[in-house]
Length: 156
Image (cartoon, rainbow, N blue to C red):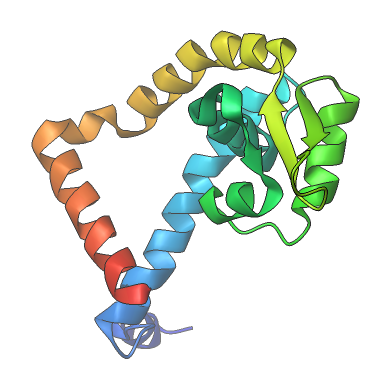
């Protein structure tokens, strides 16, 4: 290739609109950040989705949640919450019980073992987030949070 052709290729924008460029950058950033999370969770034998479920259930407290409610609170939609809960229950990280008033409702609660795993992961995950995003500083992080919330609000 000649130098002129190379310059022309570099000068061409790969996106017709900034919205497309912003969208692709958002996906690339999310993927890069999630790779760090997945690597941190690997030591505990958890996937990001399993970790998300355990955090949701820890936040729900002793009352637990129905499967549908867990699905609604997930960061990323998982079409098979039941199978995800099956794997967590097999490992003793959650418990499930049928509601006495409505036997169709199954309530899931985090088990002590699940709480211990989350407690062990709290600091490494927090340190990972600081490592990944701390260089932005408080003001830029606040701006980023505001922009991301605004993007999600429009997308609903």
